[in-house]
Length: 353
Image (cartoon, helix red, strand yellow):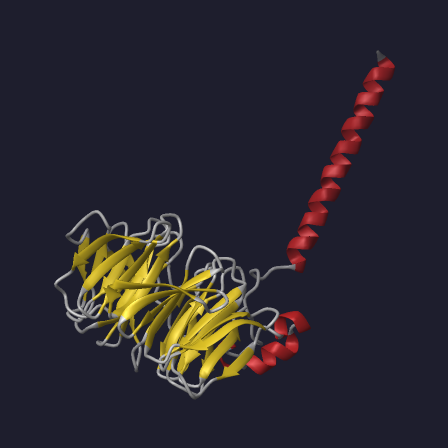
């Protein structure tokens, strides 16, 4: 028994020494990495929004640096864009008819064509093998080689599109004031809702519950579901027309911008405004990343804001980048620190750490 007691004491002493060592090691690692993961940090008096994309591309490794690039396409712009759900493939559509899909990481061109009429929006469907293009008159479906699969004449004068991946529905909003849903698995129209609110050119979806948010010229935002002919909710958000809106991936927060040059953050669960800020030129395009960064385009400048979804208003941008042409489309690439920008002079891929 005495031997057993001694062994037990030794084991206790060893385990205590081990835990003390582990605590010391953990404390050391805490000291090594005191900052938050990932984000840019300037020197003592340096603003991170003054750091240029060229500086970032030079400072990071070659693979990350290659994510900053420009496609100079001044002939057929301005451009709208969409990333596939995996974040690997990029689809761009120019207002004057140029449509192309690219594997942007390897820079391989999958297909390129000119549809010879106005392109209002482009959207990937459930895989990288098919995409939808909202052209001047009708809605067209193409495969990744550029072969036309369908021309859906029931959907005319479409301005904006959203694909609901868990329902296999393509939601479209038109210049005639209709919100329509196309079931892409069988190719049938599921619902056509006359909103009676005029031209519908501001649209997004709530990725959490697939509710469609539409912005209107009277300053309201309406929420829609395909099985209801009336809006689920109508919110008065701005004193002028709504220019752009976006919803974060958790479905809790909605960010809107309007002609009154205000940027407002709403808690959708309570339908209340959390805070708003004044942008001197107003924001024409908004996009939220998976990590909660907000990008807002004003004219030819895109600004990125950090911690915008909290209770406190944000005073200065986290990053800024000036482009050559008027910005027409913004989208964060899923699973990458990359912001895609479609503008009058083509497409720019911007690194956003």
